[in-house]
Length: 147
Length: 147
DNA sequence: GACACTAGTTCGTAGTACGAATTACTGCTA
DNA sequence: TAGCAGTAATTCGTACTACGAACTAGTGTC
Image (tube, each protein chain N blue to C red):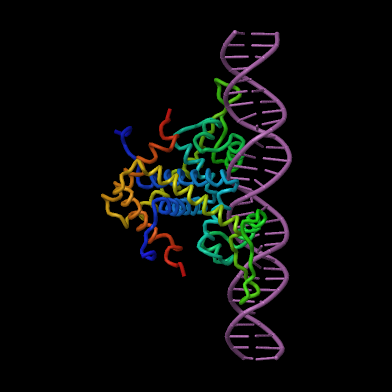
């Protein structure tokens, strides 16, 4: 009985989470970046973002953001552009190379995860998305605020 | 149209993954541990494991394991027990305190994730587990080998 | 013009992760 | 049984991640 006992929801989510992280990490490394730096690029694909807002989106302290942006800037994948309306502030913006890399890596992650979910039939995939979307809507704060 | 356009499977999985990681991280911190150290404790709940096998289970290099176990051992949550059948090897084993902490934190993660999935009805939760289990069976190598 | 507030950085500390080199032991094989 | 290939774990150097406290500089208000 215990041997055929399946996972609980929590265990299933935690394990899946690790699997996804691993895929993301592998893609990042394949592009010569640590996962966190690729993550930053992905956040910036939608458009330039200031340091504080970036910290909010990535759930990191501002001081952590400074270091992360420093390292990615050193690789010439982003630049800090000073905000003309507020001389304290700056926005972080993808370079051309950063943009290319972000798109390429994003596509690769998408491809790999989609191929992994092919063990599910299309209807199931739709349900999976619908269910996770509902949980995210309820518990991911950055969900509510694109503005 | 684009505004009502839902997530793709990949985006849904990545976002969910981050959410789960965040919950796990918050619970870990609430117990005074970095997430990775709590993760180690969780792996050890099933029983003592040697360094190499531990690296395989957690997808980490052996040298990384050495450092991780060092830090957790310093907190007196695990001990290295030398393997009587092979004097090179050792197994890592939870201390009483480590065991208590692992169970408590594990329960808390479970509780929080279960409460978060209450936006789904029981049938859906079952489907979610079934689907993720299938993906894990296909792509998580540590799935196949409890032995 | 003083002052509370905000944006971002700096600094110190701890933890995470890798890979190459090293130590110590195991088990085979010639 | 003496040598040796292979394995378990550690050490070392480097880079990255993350936090919080303290700081700098610019904003906006009274």
